Image 1 (cartoon, rainbow, N blue to C red):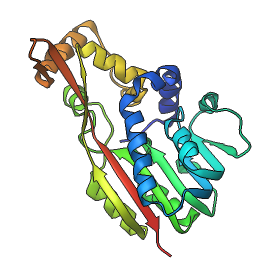
Image 2: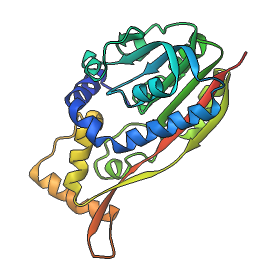
Image 3: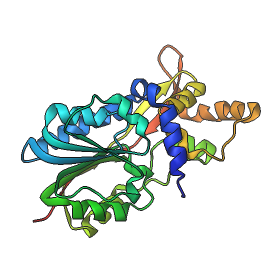
Image 4: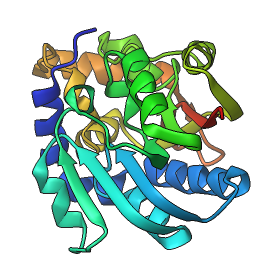
Length: 256
C-alpha cells in the first residue's frame, strides 16, 4: 500500500490535541515498552538517543523520566509536535519523513512506539538503524500487527498492510540484530456505539489511510448495522462494540 505521508502528517496534526486524551492504548504500549527497556538495557545512562515518530511525546517523556540521556534526537513528520515539549538543551529536532532522513550516528539507542507501521520500506529503515547504532547499541520499538483494527478493515476494506511478527523478526535478523525480546498481545477497547469507534479513530489520527473512503448517511447506517457482529451484551443487557489493537514489542541489540 502506498502511504501518503503528507496526509498522515495532516491527520495527526489535526488530532494533536485530542490524541493525548484518546490514545489510551498507545499510552499503555509506551509504558509496557519502557518496562521492557528497563529489563533488557544494560545501563540507564545513555549518551545519544534517537526516537522515530515521537508524536505528542508519550514515549519521549517516559524516556527522559527513566533514563539519563545526554542528547535526544526527536523525529516526526510535522513541526507542530514541538508544542508538546519544553525547550531543552539536550533536545534536537529532525522534522521530516524518516525514510528520507540521514540518521544521526553513534547512537546508543533508537526507539519508536506506534509509528513504524507507517513506514513503506522497513528493511531500509532497519538497515539505517543498524549502521547508526554503536556496537551493542539498542533498537527498541513497538508497532502493530496484522490483527490491528481488524473490525475496521473487515467492514470498510481500509487499513494499513501490517506485518506479522515473523516478518519483523526476519527483517531484524537480516540486518544482524540480536533479538533480546519479541512479543505480541491484543488490547480491546469497548464503545457503546459504532459512532464512538469512528470518533475515537479520528481523535487518534489513525484515519490517515482512509483517503478514498467517503461516508454517506446510507453507508454510515450500514457500517453501524454491520458492526453488530463485533459486539456483545454485558450482564445488564448493555451492548458493547469492540475495537482491537495488536501491539508487537521488540528489544534488539546490534552485534559487536
